[in-house]
Length: 121
Image (cartoon, rainbow, N blue to C red):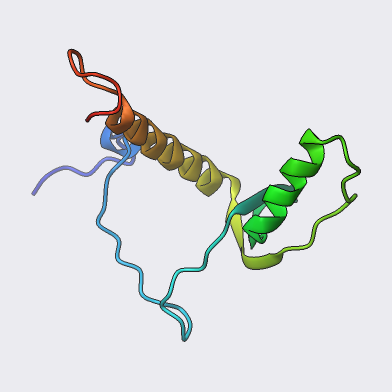
């Protein structure tokens, strides 16, 4: 019978990130993704609130045109909140890492390879 120790063993694996295959099932009646073209993040009491919203694309175009023509722009814009997610700060950090990895992968795909003219991949 092996001898048991009261000292906790520090495992190197407990400090490493582990990749798991996670499958999420729909939590409500709709399985369709919601379109969001606007995001906002706020933090209160150690929880990050991430709001996803949709603003009509024509409004973005009209605002851009008004700015270019030095016309007055509205003080506020109305959109539709499509989702609000509350995350602990450690989960927000993991989300940030995943977003950066995704963006880096997209940049690599978009970058022309050596010897190829721009615009071809």
